[in-house]
Image 1 (cartoon, helix red, strand yellow):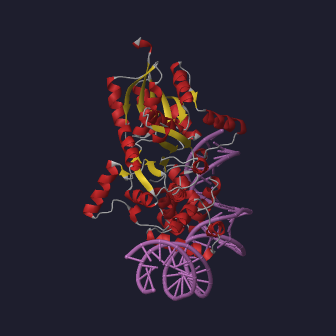
Image 2 (spheres, protein in one colour):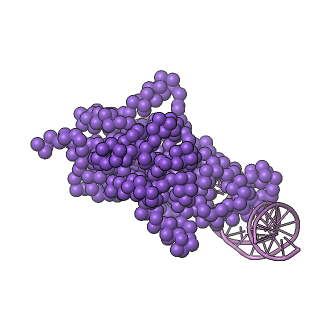
Length: 215
Length: 215
DNA sequence: TTATTTCTACGTGATAGTACTTAGCTATTC
DNA sequence: GAATAGCTAAGTACTATCACGTAGAAATAA
């Protein structure tokens, strides 16, 4: 019965991971792989043709930033359950992705059992989170301690601008690219610098890398 | 016939990758997975018990650096053929790993066919290299151009200054710290920027990180 | 020892970023 | 529908960096 199957799509730029996931999921008759994509553009294109029930999405891919991609996909196809697949276990990123419409969050060092549980879980409409991440979040909530500096939130625009700065763009370049005034870019840059408590461009770039906005 | 089988070990901290590789390789009856390890320590410990014919080694793992690990394993167990598994295709790294005893070099975005070819190839005593990497190396050799920036040498002083720049120091800070003129620092900075062919501070910081000068 | 790097340093004008403050407009949330 | 948060933008004055060219002294390699 075709209708009963859960369709899964995989977006990851590492073919080995894709093939690995395929091989793992192929054993389960209740699942079938709809398609896979190696980058954001490919993913968006494939989604226009057919939508899977579950999307396994790596957030570290060339091209579009993972967070933006997640948001976009969720907005365009709200029925697609997105499970984030990553090697970072930062609680801020988790929150960000969850806010951006992700239904699940898995670390790449989880096993097959957990992967299947995650898929089942999101199909039932629940959220799923890696145990390790859950532990971190609980610990944070209990102690009130922030485990990371990623906690300082940047707005979407600020993140975008930070990404461009780290991409070697000058303020003028950014203004042109975003079609806003140079002064606006300067204001954003000033705000970001103070929010993150860094001294200059060097500090900004390092933060951008830590936050996974580039690389 | 057990003796005819090629034994393979996998060292990768991403369980999904490990499971993926296992699933892929399990299809081949001529192969069998001896063990897998999630980090350098685990790998070294497992190797004391039994040695595989081929070791698939991820060079980005927590703990010991990939290059060191490769060197160590090759020195202690010269019969183990090491195939590097990575997402970086930098030619400098390739050379380094090959010098450190690696027999093969694979990108994580290669397919199953290439993985099997690599294993066969190193078992026959040959070196194996990802096509993309091979292309890069050939191109470099032909044109004399370096595709990798790691190759461009910085003088000691330049490295020192680059490190300080990446450490959020201003030119004046650097001048004070090194007891040299501000103008000298500016000259160095100018030279570094041009040597590395980057546009601004952002580019410098990223290069500093790639070169391991900070972090 | 000579040749080559490397490190040092200055001139000068142009371009870019810093350090704030204030403020109107627009989404989104309560 | 009021409050909050985010995006936009300008003013002003200052500081930092960029882009070269030039060039002497010291260290290092041929």
